[in-house]
Length: 190
Image (tube, rainbow, N blue to C red; front, side):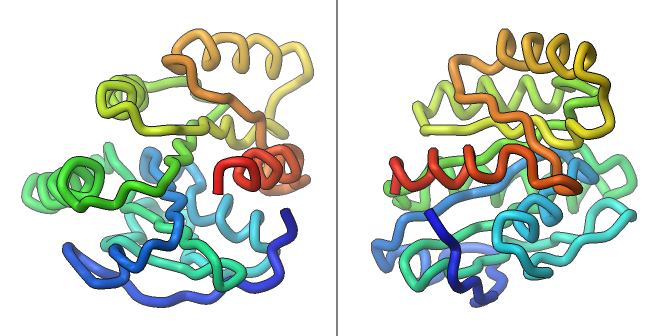
């Protein structure tokens, strides 16, 4: 798949007619500061999603239309320690609403994990949650460029073991390693 256009559409906090227009949706989830926005920007080859060294930039569901055919949906990061309890609960409810009650059926989840850190407890909870809901998912092991080849193999093997049967793709936003694999995988799903 070649991405020829990527446009920010809107940010939403809950139900919105854009979610029901029958376009396929690619939802991006992951811990705060794992590089969700950087992965989106890397996939589309432009600065589309807001990225920052400080975690917690994404506060809503940010929706981007890709090739005028499908959506990227960027979720707030989970596990952000500096967010208030109310804010963390709001993010949790937004996620549950989207995955369990929004009636969005044509979708895949790209779950981004930090390949250096490996699966955290929050990541493992997300794996279990998505598996229980039987939602198609891809795990991107981001920041692979920060590891030696030996460390990469060890971390990818461990992430794969913990993935709940999801596709695992090593990725680097710095070198674009894994980009073509992700786009090819998405092409077969959309």
